[in-house]
Length: 456
Image (cartoon, rainbow, N blue to C red; front, side, top):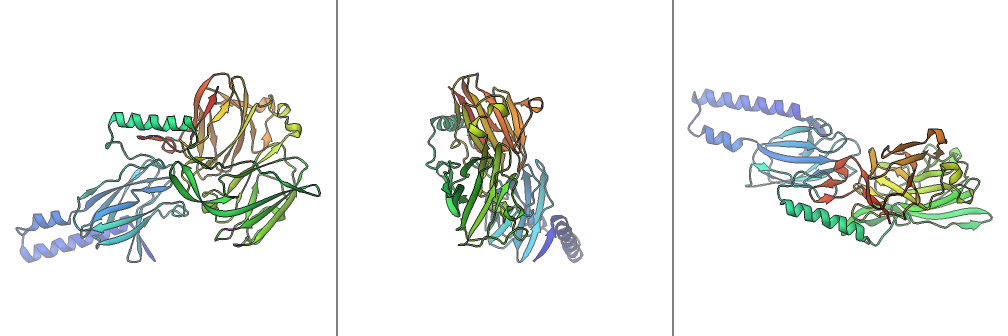
């Protein structure tokens, strides 16, 4: 399959136009009576397309057939993207468009039909950056992208009045505070079987339809049918055995992120093991050596798709007697695990998108311990309203008292884990959200990576 960049294609079109104009002038000596109309008929139609992490909006792009096209590309994501259309075995693509920048792609006139479109940055197609271009007779010469739904940055609000915008925002907040938006919950605690002193955890990797918010269901990959997978709680010195069955339609492995394990148990295909093929079982066995904190288990095969689709879960190493005070300075009254995710499931916290995210509920004067992990592909600066929290652990290492620090916004990089402590001294519902705004809010209100600390 051959590939042309938009600059080269534009040059080719310009040459063709010049040659065509010269032939007409040579034949006629001047522009004929119908020249102006002919030029108008072949003037490019402008088509607006919006890119985000990771979607193309609209997903079905309507264009006129028989007329050259200029795609006006807006990138509202946080990473560079391209926009490409497949035509007769060729991939015609734009240059990379930087975050919050614009670009163009010029195409020749298309015959009536449907064409595939995508972002050609490696991995982005698998994360959902695909669309179709539908060429048909007639239509306006300006085709605008519509506003996105609750899974990306908004293109605009021109279709809504101020009252409509306010009402939709209020509706989302009320739904969040009422709770119960979906019937499923991820990250529930799994109890092991005990065999001769060994803690044995049985899990499957399977494809499921996962409801990320009320009425919005996405194809997902899940451990034991939930996103995130079951939460595992162990202590230093525990001998553990994980038995995984692959019920996916593709190979997989499992990596224990941040844990000290024997090389044979590291879960990297063709480096430490063969992949687990569909229908096969694989057992990992080791002794917990690491200090208390948050660790992660996740897929390590086709991980852009598999982890992005939900194959991750928390492994919490607890202190003896569940006594966090010697490590973190206070014994928590409430403890929560928070996974940040992006990709095929969109922007989610614990596999859910606002308003289906679960609040962190505490009583007045409680100490709240929050374990945070980012198993997405993007940075997520998590901001808590109304409070300054103390960062007490990072990547499974408790921070010494002199190294702890106060913050209200914590940048959580892909693969990073933090433990933070909050002293719930102020009652109310306090928003807790990613501060990359296209991940959380648009004209219709809040969506995506938003929850709240609710202090009663």
